[in-house]
Image 1 (spheres, rainbow, N blue to C red):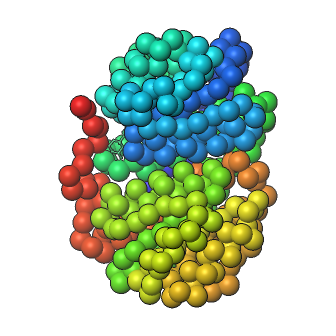
Image 2: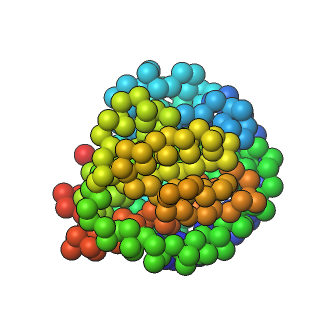
Image 3: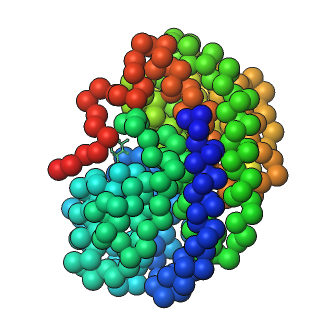
Length: 335
Ligand code: F1P
């Protein structure tokens, strides 16, 4: 967790040397749709990637679990010949993700790219273009620096094909370092509050996938009941669950700030403790984490992760659990 900003710098430097290659491969593919796929964390990363890419380019993009592409291919992909499939996998060996690539090819899909921390693996061998994040390889079952580094890479990919300058992404490593330093104590204190046993992560737009990943981290690392919702969806039923044992975590945006703040404040009225990560202003009555106010909104998703990973880590430690070795889980699921 503490080393992830260094891995972001390494991945960005490597990517920058290949911008022209990526642009040429994109121009050659000329996709009319982009489908991102993965499993678990990398499925959630696919949701974020699709949201950012469509937001920047206007090209329809979707994130789906690899298993859906294997089991219900015609429900998730139309026009595979004009679709670019981007498979994301930390390990490069998850069999569902490899099977999804095969199914896509069987359907007439011609372009497959992948993002992985292990570029000598079967997934990379099946791909036409590989975006590697080798500096983010890790031992832990739960994805932490691998996730945020692969996220930075898909942001670089989206920015390149949208003809956005990459400069703003190079501000992320120092911002990530500063956030880790600024929030370490607060996240430890919050993680130690074991009476808070129901966690809700609320985010809109690209932040929804980040909320899902934060939810998964709490589950995997600290075996805590946690759920993620699109922020305003929370009012449509789930808020009935809120009580004094609830931590409501807002992954706020600038674009939808007033609406998202209103949902969070309502949970406070229902006795929840509120943690607000905000690239705008702080929220009254909440534990606030200030995200950079000057960076473009599309660059921000990786910055929500370090404090929330620390929260999961400290809660695991407070519960006497090994956050690197969650019960019942393996680093790679092979069918
Ligand atoms: C996917 C994944 C992880 C999860 C666990 C099991 O792995 O589902 O997201 O945290 O480690 O595997 P990968 O395909 O990204 O390597």
